[in-house]
Length: 287
Image (cartoon, rainbow, N blue to C red; front, side):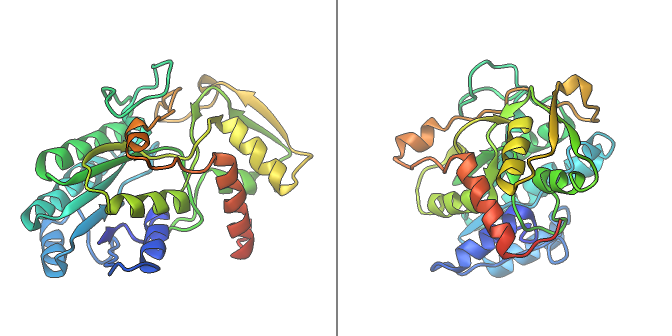
């Protein structure tokens, strides 16, 4: 079962899994509201999946600051509801978490054993979800990822698409250059999640594309690959860019656990970006 199957990652994951030997049950907010315990019970106990990949989440990081109760209901209580019935079935649960469980103060990349300390509501809600999964589900995998980018999902919104829209109106953009992370593409992450399903190891995994970048680096490379040579990108600090939620300055996630399991790292984010733009062109997505 994949929850949030109409989301950016969920849609790519369902597409990927259905190409293999898996029987996939896809749920959306319209078919199973994770905050509704009776709905979760009905769908999970009726379908009786062996594995639940829980991608459904409240992901509006800035709005979460003013919609704290809703964010906590979806990412905290909603995850608890799914985890409870996972335990009832003895099913495996894969929970998608985030780099935002960390405060970004570490000088080196974060590893799975580092202690979380979120600095915004969204990060706190996802950490609560992690704790629910760890407490309730013996066979669990928590996949922390970062800077997720994909072509699908009900909103169709992500950082790259926002940049592509803005350059149609303005040829000078101010982009944050002091936050560093690993842009991660949903089709690459979906492939890794499929691999993890068959591995009998439990706990926390860091699951991102390789390399490192700032938002400025990502925007610059995306515009270069698309041939927007005349756009001027001005690097700015986080303090110069107003947003409601604080972001970690360091979102780099290393994955020594995957290395120990002999799992090759995901492609470099530049390769992922090239594939994203290729897929974007094939789908004839309009700016």
